[in-house]
Image (cartoon, rainbow, N blue to C red; front, side):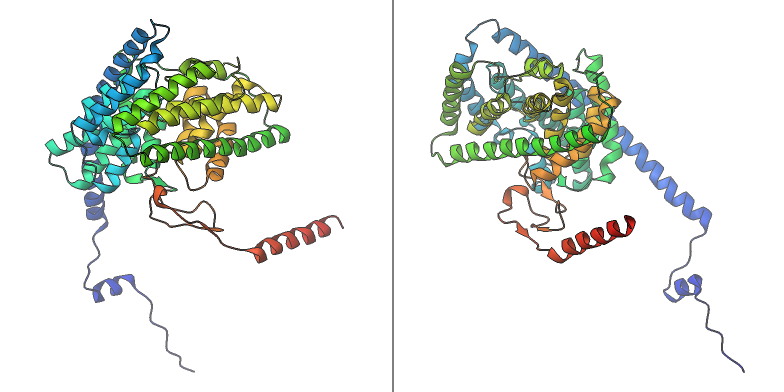
Length: 474
């Protein structure tokens, strides 16, 4: 019996019918790989130039900041100048460059999402001077935000001079973030990852990954050549990862998530209170300085400034007071919420280290080890950057801490929820399939989160697990 054969599906026939001609393999390789090579060369050159600019500006800023802090520390009651210093810092920003307001990285994220990476050139000198005034006088703020904003500002100016497209300008500004982060903390790999991870919650910008690495590595080498030294402390005592230790690390991630959440909510609450106060912004900053002076007489000077000595004390296992994480959160919230200038990550490190020190004490574990884990975990939860934080743990404390830090970072990241110290972050994915949240919206604009009930799946899972156990046990 004769049967017709089914026609063979020929891809070439489909292409001809669509009016397209298959490109020969050799020509396709020449076009594709040749284009990629040219793009690689282009972005190597552009990112390297940005890395040099950011590295040099970061070294200048850190040198001036160190000298300013050393000068002020000659006087035991230097913190009494906080009201005047915060007033001047806020006045500089308001009169000369309003875009320099806040804690640096947040404004860069906002500019990338809202202004195609355009940053006013005046931000660079104004941010540098305002931050030095704030931190040197005792304001609790960080040094990474100004470096990221200064670096991003220089990258934006350079992109405009080169007449690059808006898309390329945004890529260069992200390289500025990477260079600023790497140059401040001495972590080039984590700096690059942070820059491509911090813009969106749950998404990595792979198209900017290569130039970010180039900018971060170049900026790091420039700052080291210019005499900047970094804090690196190899953790030598790391317990074997057995079931009990793993459980304690997992639970520590939950604890650090609560700490990060408290810090974020405190920042939001105090900033909201100052925003509702209808007076001139420099007077708000002066009021914040008065509050900080009052706190110094109540709790001491340990929670002013960068807090690097307390940070090193915790990581070295020498302990911190029980409530150190809360007091540092409070002084940071007042400094930045009232109008002081500076970053947020250095205080985040202190808060995480203090929380880790407390957890190590409660669990009868090595306090220095958990202080290091806490630093990275709270960073991951507060900024929604668990990958960058996990890699940073390796760069700062050595590979032995990697598995512990990764577990704590991801756990803290999940527990913090859809919140961040950077309200301009865009939500790319929900942190759980059981939560409905407004995707593609800014974290600061989220006003409602809904729980999606999934009782059948949970009951089915438990029932299936029960029957499997019964079968295995006979």
